[in-house]
Length: 92
Image 1 (cartoon, one colour):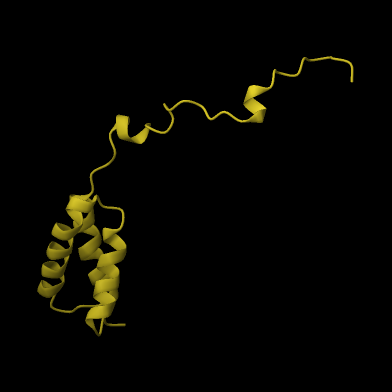
Image 2 (cartoon, one colour; image 1 turned 135 degrees about the horizontal axis):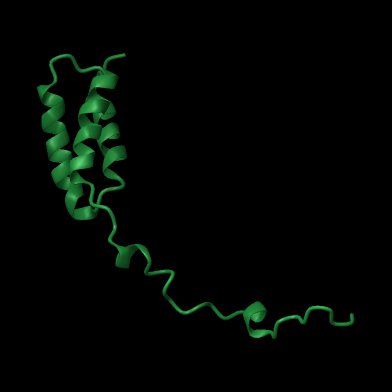
């Protein structure tokens, strides 16, 4: 199946731009549109392979500090964490 209209190509680009950092999305979109314009026989598989390879070039993984920010926050206080631990072997 050939990509017949711009909507299919735009949907592919949008789907692959989602995991990218916001500043990289626009640059990725321009590069992907340029890559798709250069493919002589634009089929669904060829388009995906071209754009997926570009996505890897624009993807920047999270550093350790940004990936673990939620883990290092103070634990939430609720009635389970405020109560004393149940003693093992305690009479019921």
